Structure formats: structure tokens, C-alpha cells
Image 1 (cartoon, helix red, strand yellow):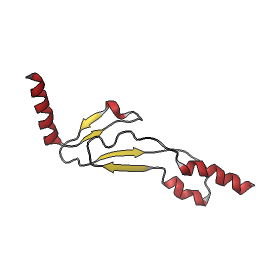
Image 2 (image 1 turned 180 degrees about the vertical axis):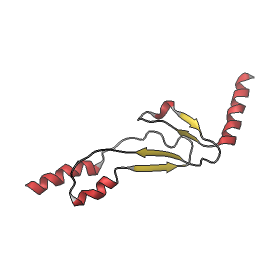
Image 3 (image 1 turned 90 degrees about the horizontal axis):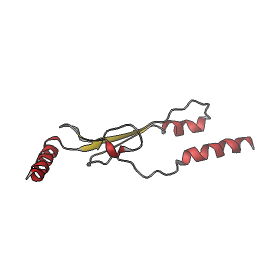
Length: 101
């Protein structure tokens, strides 16, 4: 009886509030879920990288793309994704070395 009441409350709460998103800082979103208030339609993931350095003109667009924001509209869609190799970071040293050879 208590279990059924809890499930009914959760479903009712989800219907009233809606979307469920991860809302935390860091790489492990598993413990920071939140039911969004009414009117919040999207979950977001913002990735930022801070570094100060000298750049060649062709690498400016690569640097501009290092800050990204992804938005999605399904429950818990802004969780951790499998990480891959960020190709521009691998190619930048190769391009710089090529200039000096």
C-alpha cells in the first residue's frame, strides 16, 4: 500500500513538473538527478575548457569550438556519454610540428 502510494506520488509529481535532468558539476552525473520545474523543457550539458596560449590564425575556429552547449528534451538525456578522441586537439600539435619541419 505504501509502495503503491509512493509510485502514484512520483508519477503525479512527474506529470506536474515534467522533465528530469542531471543537474551537477563534474563528470559523474549519476547522483544528481532533478525533476525540473514546470516550463523547463530542455536539459543541457555545457562543456568548457580554459587555457591561455598563443594561436596561429587557422586554429582560432578550433579554439572557438572548445566551448559547447548541448540541449535535449528527454528525461535524463544530459547524462555522461562515451568519451572519444577530440580530433582537433590531436591534429594541432601535428600541424605546429609540420610548420617547423
